[in-house]
Length: 226
Image 1 (tube, rainbow, N blue to C red):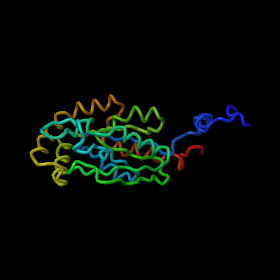
Image 2: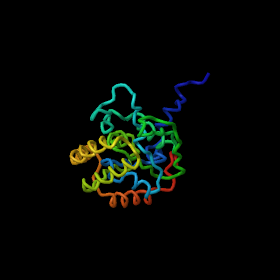
Image 3: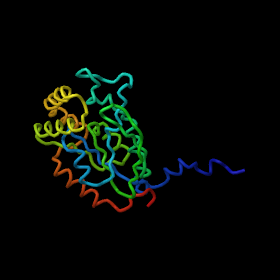
Image 4: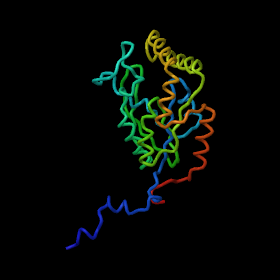
């Protein structure tokens, strides 16, 4: 009979691997900023694999959602599936591939899923207004590459947010105006809060430089056991 104590189980054996040999396949850049600050445009310019954290919003009929202006308060983190977003980033970091939800903002519900395969890329950019909620956990689990908060003049952010929301018919026009004005006034406090959660405020131009530098400095394969 084999002595089970002499043969470590698979999980125990994993911890015998030196920490430097257990690097994640992919590291994550968390990108936050006020709605309309240019997060999605920056992600498109970078061309890196990306997770749209807004796709982790809860369905509009989910019980207990916070409310404001007579509708669900989509600027409150209580309207968002933090645990689901963290699990998706963890899966990407360890396997390079994850199934992600697809969310339709005008109808306030998930409409399907999609699979993101990083195809060997060393970085993933995860962007959304709630990205700062994940900084501490991603750092603790060892796959955080950077945490950035985009910041630019509030009136610029207000204008681009309004144009986008009208073009996409996200909500009725009076709601967009009320919400946009409230966000304009709240923006300094929001940026300050995200900074305390670990995101460093910077301009979109500087953020692009920094993320490109991270991608170029990363090894071509950052694979467990490599």
